[in-house]
Length: 176
Figure 1: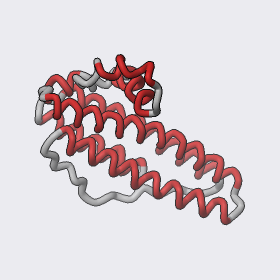
Figure 2: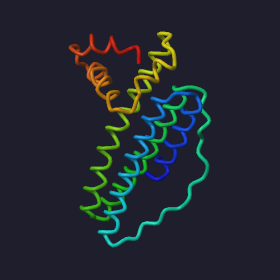
Figure 3: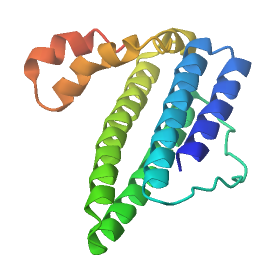
């Protein structure tokens, strides 16, 4: 699951590099690294539980993108698939009364939800930027992979959750 995601992000990053969207390419490479770290945590948990994880080669990646919106739609779809898999695994752990696995999967799901919220917020901001006529290069410059993109998006996320005090900060970020 995380192995596939890591490779998907690397392939999407390559597409961005070919399009000269270097900020987004860096952002996606950082996400790929985070997926590898997550995969190692899963491996460690499985080994401590007495299992021997096996990584199998995945098929091809649908990396043909027509825009940043299309690209981030793919990342959100991947997140949704991973969330569904984690939910299924958690249900199975619960049915087996495997509390340690259930706790581990619950923690992973919480982290996935935060990642998913970030990806969905970025996608929404890209759509707003597109509607506002912002250039792709300008949008790309906000996803420089430095972690600042998260800080820029947080006020918008709070506004979407109903926090009116964040509205001004969010309106200034429509240039993403």
